[in-house]
Image 1: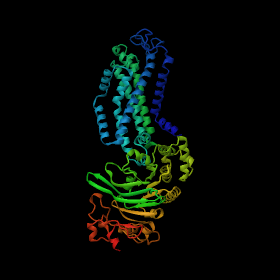
Image 2: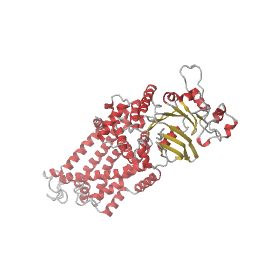
Image 3: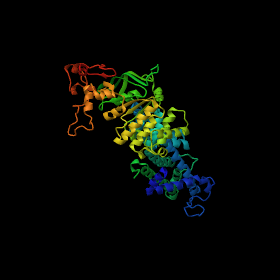
Image 4: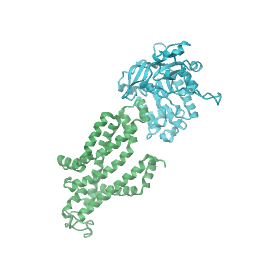
Amino acid sequence: MQRFEFLGRFARNRGAFVGACLILLVALMAAFASVFFPTDPLRIVGLPELWPGEDPEFPLGTDSLGRDILSMIVHGARATLLIGLFASAVATIIGVGVGAIAGFFGGWVDEVAMRAAELFQTIPNLIFVLTIVVILGSTLTNIVIAIGIVSWTPIARMTRAEFLSLRDREFVQACRSMGMSDFRIIVSEILPNALPPVIVLSSLVVAGAILFESAVSFLGLGDPNVASWGRLVGDGRQLIRSSWYICAIPGIAIMITVLCLNLVGDGLNDALNPKLRDR
Amino acid sequence: MSGSALPLEIVDLRTTLFTRRGEMKAVDGLSLTVAAGETVALVGESGCGKSLSALSIMRLLPDPPARIVGGQVKLNGRDIVPLPEEAMLGIRGKEIGMIFQDPLSSLNPVATVEKQIVEVLMTHTELGRGQARVRAHELLELVGMPDAARRLDAYPHQLSGGMCQRVIIAMAIACSPSVLIADEPTTALDVTVQAQVLALLKKLQADAGMAMIFITHDLGVVAETADRVVVMYAGRKVEEASVDDLFENPLHPYTVGLIGATPTPGAERAERLADIPGMVPPLNALPQGCAFAPRCPRVMDRCLTQKPALTAPAPGRLVACFAAERT
């Protein structure tokens, strides 16, 4: 009942609805990549630099080595989405953890946590990601962790702000008077109230993470064993004057996905905003 | 009483606020006993230390700035003031229940009624989730929630203030505490609902033999619910009496003022309600003598320099006033 109301409010935002549909499509593509293209997407299958439409066997053409671009895009969707989701999960876990503790306990704990967040915010994000990846090595896990580490600060600030406004509310006092421990109050009483704006922010961090990963891969620091979209753009870099489609196709895929994620974020914001509820 | 301790015995409780503007004695030597099945009303204006007394008993003071600096709070004979916080977790909600002023904001807005009651039950009892649900339903019926089965799935904003207060009462009595503290439980409710909630509290108390501290500034409510009344002023107890004695023959000028400031049905409409001039003095600027002296109609020279101690002019009565002693 409640869930349907939520979906209804979400779908009322047309952009969000379209965005969600497209994301779903990309997700399905990612999930069934090996059904559509059972062979390794990084295998050379045809002539190099076939333009889209030139050969009906490769509707989106081939790259400089003669690899099927469509196959790489479909498989790349999986890598790109997973990186986005996991990086966002890492950022959300760190951010909510730090923000909740800082906001709930206040005092010096809050000071320390917020100064730490500021320290992270002063370092340019991309350079920070690149540094971590270079130091730890270009594996998928390290890239995910690096993106998570630079993206947690806004989530931490948001969570802290929510906790600050919620911790002095009477229901929290009432929970205390019923003998609940601080941990229980944080996790099962305040957190559910603080989550809606955090969820919105997390969905936007997914989009940001995809962009970060693309940038890292474009600069040639991506995981060499994974065909993410960013890496496809990076691989086509040298041929950008003659065969620009090699860069453009994955670039458009990134653009559409990130745009859709932002639209979904907006839709979630509308749907979860308590002020718009019951109208 | 044959050896068994009183549910609640407060001895010389002192709570101080440590602020930048100095130390303020918010509760200054409060002593109080509540027997099983008895209701003691704590009465006074805003800022006289009622709620801080209640929070001191629960050990829920906001620290900083407030801290208990002395005295004992004996719960069933055990002093809980020196207990560590972990031990308090097992006491709050199980041995002392508390009901707050604003029912709607005392419930978690994003959890269902059932979930909130189940949470409390699972904090203090060994019940499984399934059993706790059954018990939650029973509790809602016990507090007279209309259509209890359906309300279990309701969210607080779907309930009226009176219904929310019933849910909170259900949560407060879920683990059958021996002491219940009600901090202005009916102030936010409208008058008809107020009467229902008071009747409910009275009934639950009588059934379970709970000791109840009832904090209010509404003397009408006091007359209806309390057995004994403690009048507080600026953090100190200024008068204590049975409810009948207090209304029949108030001794402290402050009590007289409070009663005079309460409208009585049948009195002349045109007659202006007597008010107490001035305000409760700020705790960091208390006068040297009796705190009430600047507002007192019977003030004497002595009141300005000495603090009156509590004396017992009659059995079961206490008053802290030089003027009352003389008469």
